[in-house]
Image (cartoon, rainbow over all chains, first blue to last red; front, side, top):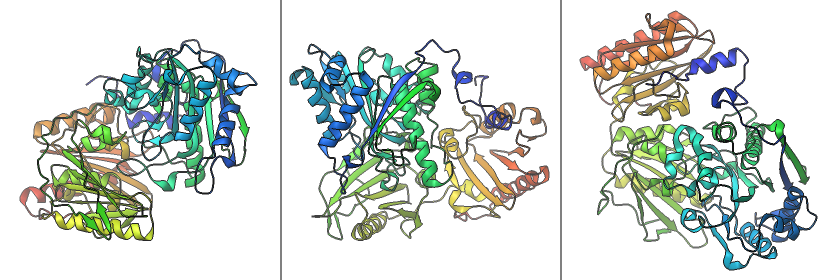
Length: 293
Length: 298
């Protein structure tokens, strides 16, 4: 067995000494230079869901437009999307089809609509999840979109994890609480192609149960969505939201089944983005009630 | 830690005749079958849990009724009663219901084990009708499994005083243990698919004490576990088999033949040693055959 073993005693030592592993620096070593601050935009609207939980597509479109224009720094949504993609791009939308909480069709339609508005012909837009390695690999631009949820094996399922279907053997990235997940972003099918990350928080899952780690008791109507160029920053904010909701719901800190180490590793080890909340500029738009962040 | 998987031959027929209709919900006639290599396609993120319990085969059926939420039956062949029991203990939740050998129900989901099978029945949405249908389907499946299974014998070694029964966890893999009680990021207990491990949580007036007992396939395996635990956890207390840890509580370990016991969070040295003394008594009784094979029900 390797000599370096982290045991319960080592963690006790840290806790007793009031030290912190929060930055992950001790775990993953020297950090490469990154931008001083990265932007994550959150937009919420109470009317995006009706009483039955159905999506109001007009409200959703407005939310998406507000988020993207704020992120890009353009007033007009189409102009903003034109900065993200070119008509010559072959655009892949990496969606998520997990049956209890998939990326809603209305969101996929809204994205496709804006891609067409930006001049991308329908035949140059692809959308897939499980078949992404085959269908989306040839794409020159990727839009990464999925719902936020807890995940038994990786702590949370967010934008970093959404690319796992590009891997030939996804289960190989499950080692050590999915810490190597960000390595998927180095695959040729993915590297440097992502133009936008969208983390949906319309109805996030904040605690799971059973074979599929899903329980409708722990789904709440947050009615929001996040956008960012940085998949690590957006997941870092998503994790904070999940933790805040768990604290609110359970009345005490209930740890995730698995710590979301892969987010810190994506930053400190794989240099994919920024995980440190102090270096993330969170811009909050719209509905503020129980925003939790 | 990556779990190893082995290919499984798909049976032509299930050895269990599953119900085709219950309370008006009718099986749609389709069946999905997954083996250790394909389980990831059906279960995103938790397949490792089942693989860690030597999972063999999963059969998925759906039951529908007009204008009612559908029901999903997940029927896991775990290969042994110990593993079926183990998966059940991994995630106990909700109210106890009398189905199979142990069962619980919460918010539209029934979980139970019987024989070498672990079963979940899930309603798309919980209503009074689906609750009844879920339980009825579970009863039907349980009745179709003819033989009961034996609980892991290692359970007999857990002292019963102050034990919290619904927190008992059976495991064979460090991933499962760490989910409930983080011990180390490497396997310092020398676990394997043939090892039988149990975690017991004891509630005392002064806090919780945790006891891990592992029965290894061979004495050599147990000796190795004793050595690695001593080296990486007991450290300065290795020679005596007991140490005061950084939170001012006691951790102790002992080995008797193929069995190792590890006690955590005792407030005093005396308390730690007394618990281990009780375990030894039980090891001796089991060795002599004084305890009946299926006596421990936790």
